[in-house]
Image (cartoon, rainbow, N blue to C red; front, side, top):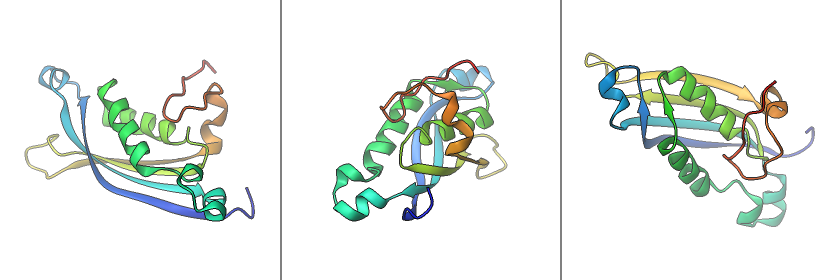
Length: 142
């Protein structure tokens, strides 16, 4: 929306656990992931009110991400990254999201393998039902 104050919210190196991978050993035990999130948010209501209920609560957001990852499983880092973007964009204030998801145990010879991707809210807004609960939208067949 033109004219609304836009700000960036950055969350760097969030440590989470997830079932991720294609190999048998990866499908049994959650592995550590490191997630960095960059969000372009409409902060106009929060700026005017200076109240948490009008802001994107990053504590609640990261808790929901951790819960969501504990309840899902992915084989590919690319699929997890794309699904995470969709979850973040379900937040009404988020206009654009960029994530960097790192898997430290992917290669013994490398410190980390990353998948980096970004999306805008306009890319996904028509693919979700009208759920108002952040990180709780269900995909609808297109």
